Length: 435
Image 1 (tube, one colour):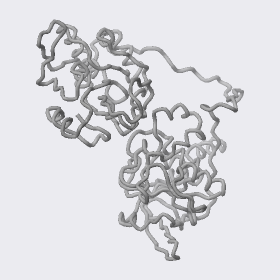
Image 2 (image 1 turned 180 degrees about the vertical axis):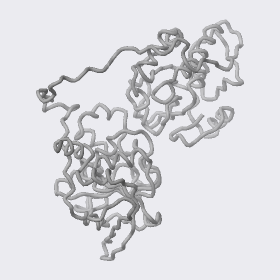
Image 3 (image 1 turned 45 degrees about the horizontal axis):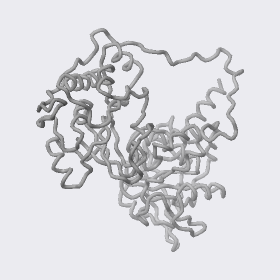
Image 4 (image 1 turned 45 degrees about the vertical axis):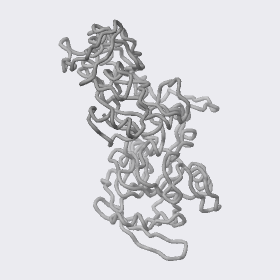
């Protein structure tokens, strides 16, 4: 069982009960959720259904809500055909859409106010604060699908289904047996419903029209291509303290209603990121106006209105978490030119490259400490930007002193072409126009 608030905090289930009491985690289990893209294979659902069928036979009832998100239409159709879905529903489980769903906060959570401490358990792969339901008080734990399912019958974070018994509807003391299940369906997988629609042969005649006052949809405009010049005197929008995940950069949950409207969803940019200079989340200083405690999105919009790009400085494993591209698109849209960190999470680094943002790492990680809130950074020698070659940057301090630092990058020549074109999409469009 791992969590809360990070997938890095792990312990065996036998140790959890004591830790719940020691650390004052909420003991009552509100909701148990299984599925998502990560843990909803046929075997995962088979083993969860085996737990449920045992519970039905032994006269047990759910003590916590149980929700199921099939990872794909193929899985949903197959477990419907083979009966696992019906067993989960029979015991009171709620089957949700084949989608990310609660993993990224796309569900209607009832009964808990913002900040109210509570516990949930999921078989998802991420459990950062606010991720699953937008509530900072939710302590989200992660375990295997069968363990999550079993915990829903115990209803408490102190329940250990490996050793503990439960009292059934007849007042009898019963215990769940270890789950079993087939790895693959004996009858093969069901295809399920088709969701793909063939595009028309003459695509140029198709016009996509979006209501101009829509809050949820907005047509994308191409980002500007690189002008061939070095990036000079860029202000520091944010120097992030410690962990800065994609949920810190672009929180999910209620914000995802704007995922089709880049301008609106960009208002959530960095609202979870902790400012090293103030230890405040989501707020910084506009160094052009001197205003403090301003939302990062508002500061960046001011810089953008003045035609000024900006830089973010980060710690290790910057961009850990989901693969959502909004965490790279929003900074690009609001004027980010470079993200300079000690190290990147791989997928986020690639997403930044695709959006035309320079993703760079300190050659000397100690250079992170040199960056001050009112510094300016110039990234120089970009006309010689080539694979395997260090990039140089100049830190200009407010007292007039300058420091030269070196930065690593992992760009291939193709990815450098994306940067020059302004984004990977721009480059694809260019290539198609030349054909």
